[in-house]
Image (cartoon, rainbow, N blue to C red; front, side):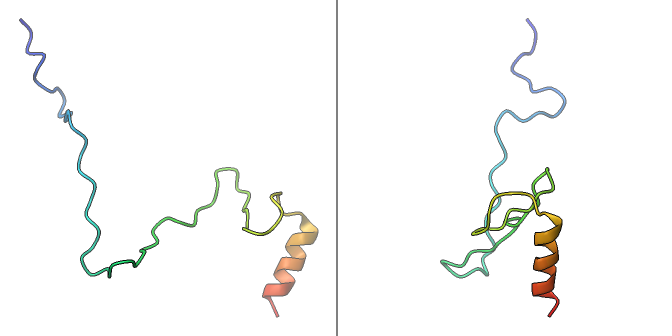
Length: 68
């Protein structure tokens, strides 16, 4: 009979355990990793603003607010 109980090509039957959080983090502290990302579409959506691609006009105004 074939050795079907043997994993092939180094495939592990059980998923790897999740990495433990660093011990130096205090309780309640949130370490933000990868929280802010750019969607694949390349359209940045800012909370509290209209969900629509930046037009040239809105981009110019936004840059004007930043570059004071």
